[in-house]
Image 1: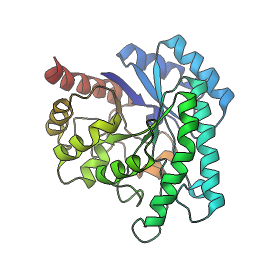
Image 2 (image 1 turned 180 degrees about the vertical axis):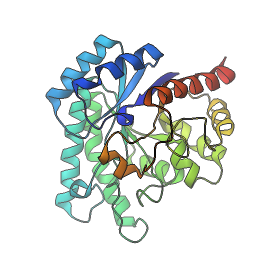
Image 3 (image 1 turned 135 degrees about the horizontal axis):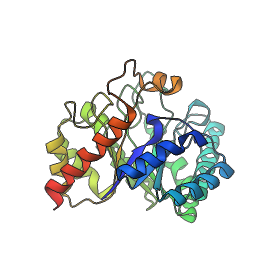
Image 4 (image 1 turned 135 degrees about the vertical axis):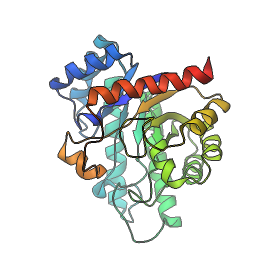
Length: 283
């Protein structure tokens, strides 16, 4: 198992002020970090790849799509913009030494049509992702498709829908992630959902129901870890938590109050929580 933490707890961009945080995360015992990749600056991520190598930290990355590059837009030009944006992000992953690119790359986050997904939108989404998949393969990057809850998107909101999507894309470099926060809202049977997801899952986001310290809320953690172990899964477990550090992240995640002592405390407790649950079952 590898253990990571999403840097969105601290930042939505890479900058030199993060060095003490990264050194601290490494000292805690994390294997790597999940990089916010919202600015497709290949030169920037080349530099950061070297810095993370020097620190001995591996990395995954996370990105999003918006209204202007929505992969399921009825506009062919917008869908083409999505392909271009995804390819640029994949190039940044390659520059930074990232092999797993997570996030809701299937559609625009926070954009709603007032109805559920249509057959046309599904076809457009599959077509867009297929156009990116070969580029990702050539770069050594796997796109790890993340479904979100119904309040953040309408296109993919369950394991069942996500598996249907990636099987339709039908490319080894398009897989999925399982996020405990979204599943806690959307799945009726966590064991069944995890069992269905695990063959395709490259990353598990360990995220509490209130987005703060994992293990201190009401996510069904025993059922979750038991089901992951029952499927003999071994990959990246990444803490995803949010706070009040950045106005843009606050607005996007709807976190209006601080629910942990400090980012250091959350990171340390989150790692201990993951390791304890894995040791209990995988030893």
